[in-house]
Image 1 (cartoon, rainbow, N blue to C red):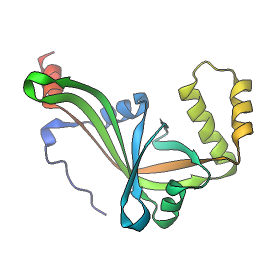
Image 2 (cartoon, rainbow, N blue to C red; image 1 turned 90 degrees about the vertical axis):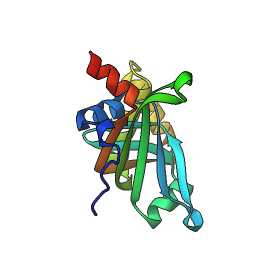
Image 3 (tube, rainbow, N blue to C red; image 1 turned 45 degrees about the vertical axis):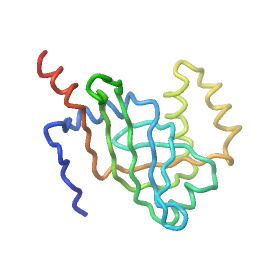
Length: 165
């Protein structure tokens, strides 16, 4: 599939900036084909590692059912975002990823959960992390998104500030 080019290409950020936003973001929104053909977009904690995005989920439910139907997803992360009232706009940076998602099993799921635990509980002990992962296995699923296309964009105001430096 050929992905669309960004319409406002002057605001497009390089892939290195997209990866920076993905690595530092706190949450993103996963979009899937939901029930009845309706889009289903859900905020998610995630980790970006090795060119892939890892998410956690309940073992069963709307997300897992949607992935069984169609593995193509998009994932959006908003980095900086501050309102500029006098201009009726915001100073933002964002990333949109298109890719294929799959539910991980066994050791792959455990490895993904370790990455998530390291991001969201930095400095926690390995023993504590492993105890938490083991106590919740069976109730959770890990999802991996293989990135096929990525774009990042920033508000004109942020682009101009960078150019002025």
